[in-house]
Image (cartoon, rainbow, N blue to C red; front, side):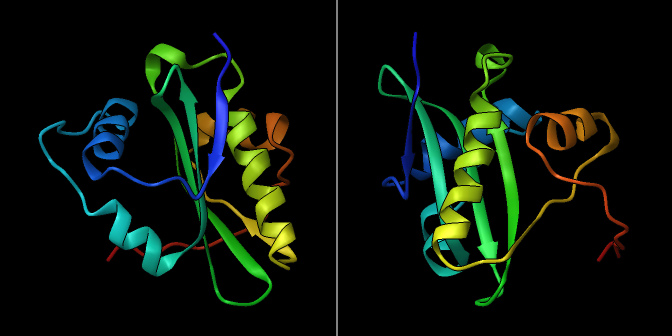
Length: 132
């Protein structure tokens, strides 16, 4: 089946929380306030839908200026390996560019290096992190 991308789709907190739990191994019973968070903090968000079901998601936060940040890239494990994640991140880059951003940042774990650097076109940069 083909998937369709939908920028700034109407978010159902239960549906997105369930996708996030499947993609990241979280507790499927926990429902997070996604719609409220996205409305307050995100430049944009994009869903990937197949037959009306949310199978992928990405959000872009920003500083209100030239910098945007990819967060929460998630694809349902049963739908991975079909280009959904790459399409989501590339659409996020286009949405960020259209909003006037000049830079799109992403942090990722080592096992995702191939995805972000080779498939999505990011280049490696030094960065820092503090656990809070």
